Length: 200
Image 1: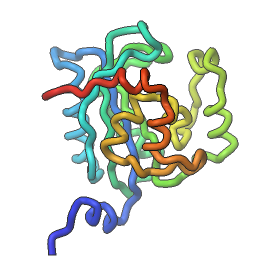
Image 2 (image 1 turned 90 degrees about the vertical axis):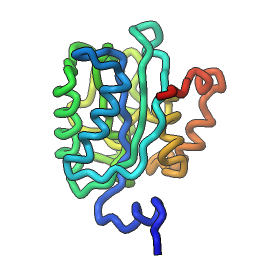
Image 3 (image 1 turned 180 degrees about the horizontal axis):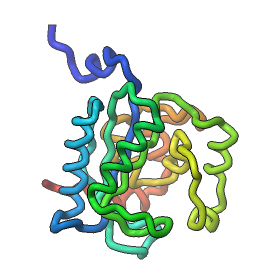
């Protein structure tokens, strides 16, 4: 009997994770969409099983007018690698494509965010809530020293939720208890309409 994609996901021993990718700078003559596609291809060579990949989207830079438009995507992967080690792999992929961290929300050649690791709340709910509720001015000046899961502001960002609608619309946020679909459609229509699907 042939298994469909959903069945394959269920029989993996590891944890299903959601990952966001973005780029708004070329690097070594490669356009943003090529850098993202390269990174997705390389992820599968690091003991990670990619089960779903979104379309590519063009989205306005965040914060608005801070730089060129972004290309964004999302994927679901399955792994037995621990979250902190997984982040090392993701940061290594960024560095290999010219990522330099100068300041918060700067333009970048490649940005890869671990959005969720199953239903894990890490390191604890109190830390998650601290960063989720951080004032917007402080968000621009500070970043957590350690990994926070789920990503504390994924629910606010169309450039994250739009691609996630392609790969995990029914994933339920373990703290907010809302699905990706519910979070996406709670955003203003004008914000959702800013997402543009790229034709490859």
